[in-house]
Image 1: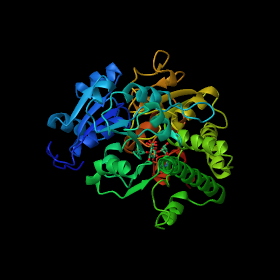
Image 2: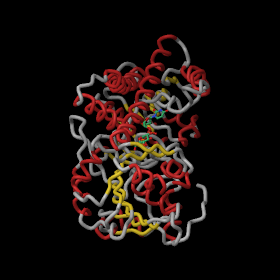
Image 3: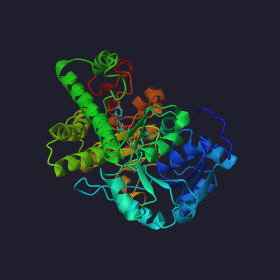
Image 4: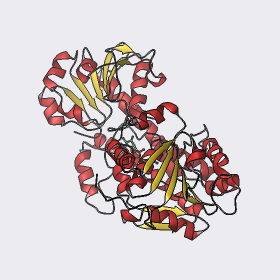
Length: 447
Ligand code: UGA
């Protein structure tokens, strides 16, 4: 984390900002704005979450967040409130960072956005700028404007591009800032809040800004589907995807990011936003078959990983014990929403495997079926460490790329397994070294 000196309270570039919602987006956004010297009130109505924040405990796993929040609280730039109506009083800017869950048809549920806008509308000072930070359907800025119903309040779209796990770094050093509104001056004012990042600023209309967000995530998802498909092809051809990706990545137009094959892309953003964009395209009468293909390919990727585990167990997992390392949708987060790792684990359990799972962010009492735990873990046997998860297993599947899995005592893993087979769905381990230890090894597109 960089340390930038906080600006003084009377600095004309310092603003009063309210952030509504202390989730994966709102919390890093509020802490970052406080770090940039603004006076921020973060409103969160979940009492437990608020109490945790007030006592210095972070409600989400996010590198560097505790320090950034502590810094804001320490300087007085960051305060918490249980009420959005209290938080917005006197604010120059109000950031809406509330959830936008998805319906079955891919459409976004704007009820939280609507409720927040209704709640604060009448309380805003004339000239306040309301910022849509949550990922919202194209047309949402106009929707929020209508809900607020105030000609003296402007609404600006300012999509976030934070990755979970590196949200603090991404907030402090964004690749770009996108702001969109009918009133270009209001949009530029929002960009000005982040001026000290020095990031390129794209000022546009709200519709374009909202489209940029979906197009970015859908592009990343499509890139990953492509990468996963190339990995599948490598297996058929006898090529090694790792070198193929090196060969691709050095082309600056392609770059190295998002070239790691995996069990499929997941999380709360890529799956949601690709489906949403497909829905938006359908509504607009546009046949976005490329995107539909990327989504279908991602489904196949999950099935391919399951098939690899079945093959490692001799053709079927029915009645077999399978160790699973990793349940979160990627490493360095505790988020299991739309996690490919969790979906693979459940599919294996549905096929009759006894699934022994370990994840560094899931606490377990040792081999306990998660009957009384969170719903999404039901049917899995939760283990306290990776060795316990491997004990008696006919195969271990590495499903999330937690760094600690690289550095295990693999002789010990070998000795506790019933059959030493590893399916490495993240290409985390060295195939040759793993085989030298006596394991059978199957990666994704690796020889
Ligand atoms: C994504 C985008 O990367 C952010 O820019 C965006 O702001 C965010 O969604 C959002 O809309 O809020 P995030 O969901 O945190 O961020 O996760 P990513 O790092 O994009 O990973 C998404 C999925 O792709 C994960 O399942 C991950 O394991 C997978 N992935 C990623 C790979 O399989 N290989 C890679 O090389 C990279």
